Image (cartoon, rainbow over all chains, first blue to last red; front, side):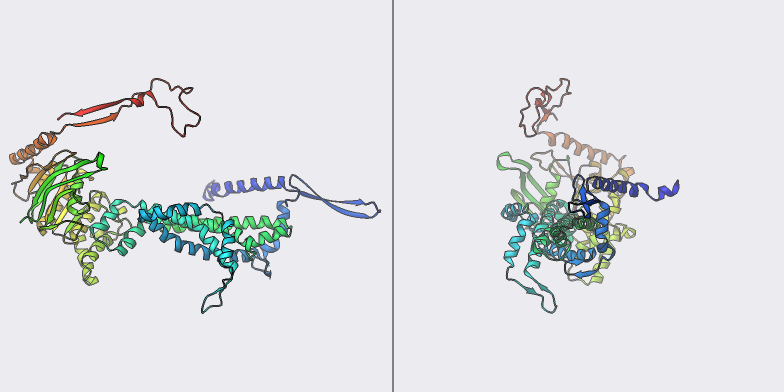
Length: 294
Length: 305
């Protein structure tokens, strides 16, 4: 029985069991189509397809796989702007998320530091932050569209051109995913033990040295927790952003397929978004472990 | 003129209406090259006193001067060894000390700074642990790093805040000898705060007892005329040692304890009466639970000398 133990049976079989259970429930709820040959009122023999089930229009696992196969088998195919392989869409979405996410980190981390370091700053901006924090991405996006209505930013020296809808999407991702970074960094700065600050004071470290040698390393674990939560939110927002702007990407594809009544692809998108989100979270937690300073 | 002088220093904490004066009318004068031990109860305000000298906090009244200049902020002329080591856990032993060296001697060449750092690591016998982080070191080793860091800045006065109180007896003895050895080598002024009378007598030239807080104040300074090097084994049998010890303890237990302290404390009686759940709990209680009878009892305990 040694080889079973080496396989870590619990780590593989138990999660699979959970997935199997979900698929089974899905199968139970999904509609089944039955095709019957009947003779209609005119005396012609026609085949009629009827869907029955708890949720008649929900495609079953088998149907979903059948419909999704071209997108999965050729993941990087590009048949048209809005008809690409699933990984091709994912890549487009990830690029957009990455831009918004890094913008969020770039803005959020310093704000977090200021909040943690200065009581006055906290008093001034905490109410604003607390008010802006719970606003949904669906609410931010229209504002982003208005903000960048006639903007078209081209990066000098490259062929990159940001259109209004792209800028709006980046803005939405940034502003929605910023808050966990801001909050965690602030908490981390406030949680720095007095001992470390005393060391900085006794050694008379300069401001920049105190920041880089004491404050940043001491806050790093908190910051990374924030970064990880932020990444989760940034990925969450992408769907909303792409749905409303109609950009090609995994979220845009989902919305388009819903409008085209091909429900199987919606499920494909949901599963892809979930898997990618999970992978990103794992990746961040690996990075988090590497940057553990305390 | 004395190197370090405190005249009429008092310090209190808390809001104005409920202010407790921790230190009251502290007068202290320390000559250059002296090793002074301040011995007192825990909670008497020893750390507050060291923080005052270090410049981390300012006195409410009175004056603390170093070489005639008032102490207003921490400075390179005072090296502090904190009770809880206060090493930066993300830096190695070398980097922790180098940070201090780099700060104090910014004009030195990198090579010289490195050599200087290594010299102090060697002084506390930590060369094998040079590249280790504090988390991988034992308590005694961490405290040695802390001592090396304080010494590496070549301060005029070394402030030790209960440097050995967190260590086991054996490590403690080794480090006591080591600190005295380093002091004899460099002949720096040392102010050590401790709660161990024997430790004070073994290491210091002079012992100053600190009375119990609140309103702690320094007692009469007691010189330690024992010849160096002092041997801890023989010391226990010397009549002078016993006499000194008696003097310090007598002060601490007698005069130093003269203030009567009253403590209000909550009495938690065993819950013999079952809680009446049908009574006393409003629907919207917001997390407040019914007060148990035993929680209402308080008593005032007077501590007699």
